[in-house]
Image 1 (cartoon, rainbow, N blue to C red):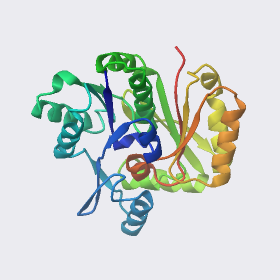
Image 2: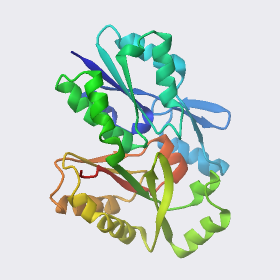
Image 3: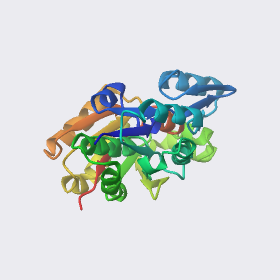
Image 4: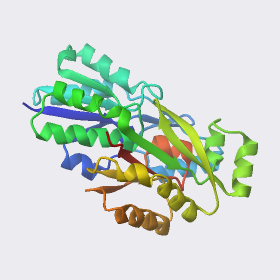
Length: 284
């Protein structure tokens, strides 16, 4: 029994991780004005930032192309028995529906097991790696889908944002709030709840101290979390901040694996540079 794992590009998994775990990426699209690119294929995060700063605007993202999903299924349908397909939260994108429509088009819906992550970024990636672990054990698509359904609600994803400028450009906060944030050094914590991003707390101060405060606020949950892995994700932060964050998490002696990762187009476009967050599975 062989099960193929396919996940949309919002998972923010590196090419190396995907290759090691037999995970295939279906790219979303990034819109920079009138130009359209495939996330992680023909556009980089640094290019996205450069365009955003030059134009004073936030890049737009759109769902994967149906034709790309169909082509992926065609490529693998004779080599695998089942497919497990994971998407960014269906409230944020129609990636989930694209997978569904592609399976219908090829009449293989009985072999395709869809999972709405109710999450984004490495929250999707964490589930994809869990799916890969189960696939390596020879689990069927149905068994993997059932296992992921039990985990989805326990995935905890949060970020600390360095600047509100990008959220302001995207219409997610007022200009006054963005200005005050810069003046007062206010850094909001954004969490994913019920498939949507929300501001849950605001920290004040320089970013290196804010990040440690943020991590310590999570310490109780981290010490009770699933031990398998934790993601430390960033959209481009100072090396010293990333180093301090990893050292703190390592000092907890909790996780078998701490994965440092770079945020992709969705998080980077909306939250901007300097964002850092953690993703883990809360204990039962």
